[in-house]
Structures are given as C-alpha cells and as structure tokens.
Length: 118
Image (cartoon, rainbow, N blue to C red):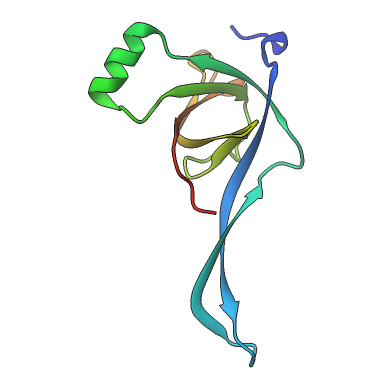
C-alpha cells in the first residue's frame, strides 16, 4: 500500500487541445494548432516507480515503449492521451491502471518517453 509520504515527486499533467487557425475574415482555416494545456491547476503529488530488472526484460519483449510508472491519487480525469511533465522530462501516458485493492484510491500511470507534439 502506498502512503502519502511516498508521493514525493511533483508532476504536471497536460492534455492536448486542438484548435483551428482563423483567417482575416474570421473564418476557420484547415490549419490545425495543437497546444498542451494543464489538466489540473497545479502540480500533482506522485511516486515514480521504476521497473525492476525482470519487468524491463518482460517490457522489452511485450511493450518496449513503457519505461516508467507513476503512482498518483485517484482522479477520474486521467486519460491515456495525456502526458506528464517532470522537471525537464516528458512522459506519454500509455495506460491508466486502477489499484488492485479498491480501484479508487490510487492509479498507476504507465508511461513511455519520447517526442510529443507541441
């Protein structure tokens, strides 16, 4: 069980918003603008959970993209299309997994790192 004291990292959760450019007549154009915006007003407390050696071998064989996990308090807003910003690193949220005991206390965000648009 995770205790709040273990949630020592501060992360920012962002979601991508798509808008369309507007021409001089005020009409939308086909030019899409994608912007990453914060999901929550401030930082979220989280626990970074590195993969063990065995998990790394298994992840390499099955899902090589997943390189780290973050444990956070349950909030229904988390989605797989979002990303996490931790210091200068970006992590794509690949899966949102509820805790096995209750399903509503904690979430594990399985993430990969890589290039994000924006």
